[in-house]
Each structure stands twice: as C-alpha cells, then as structure tokens.
Length: 445
Image (cartoon, rainbow, N blue to C red; front, side, top):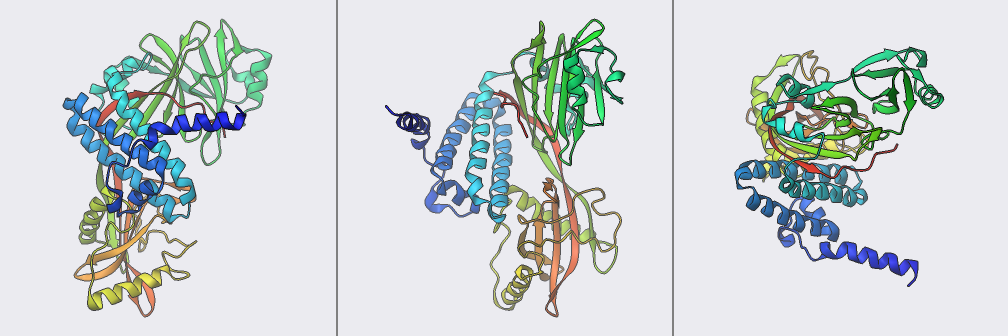
C-alpha cells in the first residue's frame, strides 16, 4: 500500500466515528448563522451529534449536577454562537470549521471528564478545595490559599542581569538568561528544587523562560516543564501545592471558564502535565449609561440596554434582536441601516466607531470601547422611538473583551447621530462544574 493510501485509510478511520453522527438538531430547520455553520460542515455536524450524546450521558451519570450542567451548556452554546458570528461577520468563514471543531472537541472532553472525578497530583488537592472558592473568583489559586487550602506561590523579584541571580548559574543558564529581554524577573519560592527566570514582551504579553534546577548554591539549566511553551496572555507560576512543588500554567480565562495546567517536580525533573478546567456562571452588570446632548446620565437608557443585552447574551449573533417592522417605522429604520452600512457609516466594512461617551468621564473607564465587525445592528426602541441599535464587544486592535456595548443612533438630515450609550460588564459568578482534561501540547509562537 502506498503512503498516500495509508494516509487516506487512516483519515477514514479517524472520521468514521464522526460521520455516523448527525447534528443534534434538525438541519432542515436551521435558522441562525451558527446553526447553518454547523449543518454546512459534515465534521461539525457530526461533532454536534457527539456533543448531544455526551451531554445526555453527563445528565444521566451526574443527576446531582443537572441544573449546573444545563446552565453551563447554555453558556457554552452562547460562546459557540458568538465565535461563529465573529468569524462569519469578519469574513473568516473558511477558518471557522477548524475553530468550531476545536471548541466541540474540548467541550466533549470536558463533559466526559466529569466521569473521571478529579485530576492527578498535584491538582487533586486544588480540586478538593474548590468547594471553598468564593463566587466571582478571578485569582483561583490565591483565593483558595486565602480559604486555607495549602498553596504557596513563588514571588517575583526583578533582576538587572544574570549576576543578580541568587545562585551560581552554569554556562547554559547564563546563555539562556542572556537571550531573554531586558525586563528580567526571577521567581523565588523557599524550598523549591527548581525555579525560572523569565521576561515578558509584546502587546500579547508573551513569556520567555530560562528554567533551572537548584543544586545547593548552584543553578543548573534544565528543559522547561511540559505545561510551559512560548505562551501569550497566560500566567506561568512556580508553586507548592500541598507537599508537591510544581510548575503551573493558568490561562487568563473568561467569565465562564478558567484552566489550570500543572507539572509536579519528581526527583530531578518534571512529571507529566495534568489539567483542570473550571466552568462558571456569569452575570450582567451595568457599568453606566449616558445620553445626548452632553454628559447626561441616563438611567432610562441603562434599563433599556440591559433588556437587550440580557437577550443577546444568550444568543449573540446577527438577527437575534430583530423584530418585524411595518409601514413608516420599517421604512425609516431601513433607511438608517442603509446609511450605517454605507461607506463611512458606523457599520461599513473597514470602519467601526468607538462607543459614544458624549464627553462623559465615567463611562467604561479603562475598558476597550471600539466596535468591530461582529457588532450587530438591530431595531432599538427608546422613549417610544425606533432607533438603530448597535451591540457588540469592546475592542482595541486585535484584542476583544467579553463585555457588551450598546449604542442608539438616529438618522437626521441624512446622517446618523448618536442618541445614547451603555456599557455592560460580564462578570464571573459562582463555580458550576470542574473536570480534568488532557492538556494540550505546549504552544510555540
């Protein structure tokens, strides 16, 4: 058999279990952009069917977690819809299949991971302490430590150069540290048999590490733990969890999810990676609302915006806030939408406004307030008038947050003028579920 035929045969074996599944819903009735995307790709359709099986099995095997599972599944589906709409609206539909496939496989693994109970050492003791985790926690390890869970984290100490290291580095470590950026930091944890000097650079906060083993007064360069790669937008930690010293990788997370990867130190090296995924509830909190003409607090629009956000947060994709319009109301709204999409309009390709603040210094302070392609136009009723609503996440360049921005616009003399704005924070709530999963391979950028 030729190499090509062997590869094709392997591919068929890999895809055969998927092709036996159909989507978990009737594709003939697919109405939303995300449902159509699922049905358009056989791979995703099959994964959707497998996800349905995994979810039903989780409900059967964990009846005590039924309410949490149902709520968490709604949150996950909303994230899927948000992702699909972001890619489709941004002209990245060709990349969506691989992205959604990754989302589905991770979700299926999480649901099946519930049957495994808790992860292996050193994260087993973290899993045991999760009942003490306070609602809204964004610093899981420190919050568990504050609740009495035996966790000690290394402290960061700035260092000018390798001479500031409190050990005698070997030549390999000297070379590794010399290859880091100028902003050097060393991790210090009393009693730990290893540590690492690191630097962080770029707008993505990418980490570069120079790990070492401590041998008396000497520091010997070693290979990094399997949970550390050239990671960006994440946190590398050195910690003592119970009786184990370990290297950790804690992602920045989202309101709904946080993952913790760990590799404990065994003898003179790192053991295999383990990972624990935490799933959370979330809530919507109005940051503030303002109206024209200038710096006018607008509680009335805040209430209106929260109504729309509550609905859109459950189904964040184009069309979910649409409603049937008739007569003059329809004609005036369509004219305003046409102006919004015209060159130079608020929703034109390549152009996106920032959230109008009408001169206020109190709206969305320190937050990202730029709209992007995933922002959605919809008919918004305020004070009895149908306006053009604009809802989306906050952006700065390539970065985006999970919060929601809502603005209202009126067509006047052929131009759209802002009427009101609101910013709504999406805040983490209580822990719903946790499960061990297989850690991904280290990333390289």
